[in-house]
Image (cartoon, rainbow over all chains, first blue to last red; front, side, top):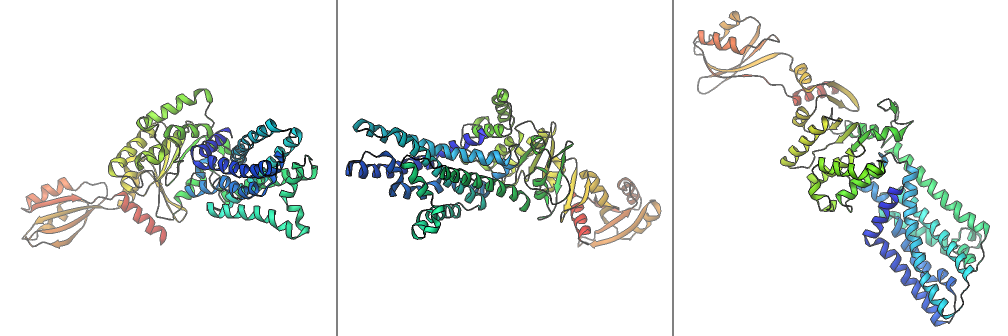
Length: 228
Length: 284
């Protein structure tokens, strides 16, 4: 599995994808930081994760990270190399998932520089910030796992990206119009973390949804062996 | 061993099943007494696969790719570096090991793919159309490499080029519409299809004495006039019993009859003829 993680990370950082992901996210984060901290004088690190620019860019950045995971392998035929190797499909899927997650974690670590700036000028809440970081990681994990699933069902990267973006926007916007659908609003769940509260139900929802998507990806890959 | 068959015969599908890329709808794949369905990891370790179309991670360098293949094939970490070096040497990639795969020519890409298949010291190498898209020089190089590897590995390859099969393989499986039509050595397949023993001769025979030799040489079944040429020579086909080489006797007897020989040749049956006959037979 480590071989797959290493190769995927090499791909992310030997091509612009990893840098675009981190760079664009930090740019959006900076805009939010400017308006929240400089504009309103609010020493609130947590709110930046929940702000519209940050969430908006994530809708496009996460698919950028995940869209090629399986679809490109299938299109180029390199999945033959993977699936005929002694590696199990579970390890291949987990390897790709963990590599994407590492990029997200690196991005989160980069945001700590904003926290350091706030620490210099004020007294931000460290426990709340840590809970927010955990919540944001779970939030991103959920969409990464869904993006992987979308990538496994098509060999067209663009279609995989569109499915992921559509899912992100549906779970973001739809609950605002229909209160019955609040249960699928991952953003509302993230909001609770930014207030420093770890909601067990929300945590379980994030984790189980991610596990479900990973398992479905494994099933899709396994199934493809018998339906070619 | 070679898999040969027309397009859509099921060559690549068979290879994909052997390598565990797709599952067979029925039956079992047993590799060195290991059922690939039950113990896929162990069975896959015994196989090196070079897929059709040479799929490669083109953003990696040659060395990175071979190392990656060694990692996913779980080559022991202690000996990995040394084994990667050895395979790079063996496949003639030393000069380009630091180059990105996307910058390489088709011939080199083919070698890189073969290097990937060789990683992990598999007992069986499966090569799907290994010379497709190569120029004649590259084809010769790859064939030589296959011949060299054939000394230490069992090689199963699929090919559309029959001359390649005759040169490289010592067993051929001809398949058509998913079914095996024949399994044998290339020579035996040619002999089987050859059937009767035919000699073609072009002679000058103004007195039409050719029919006389039928009585003089035992085993001649039939003499057929094929063509009368403008220079008054005639072309005949002489069919004889199997296992008789007529050429020496014909030369002597025709001379005695004052018949001048312009040309004499034994009818060659190539693997191509064998293939066509077997496929046509199967279709009927």
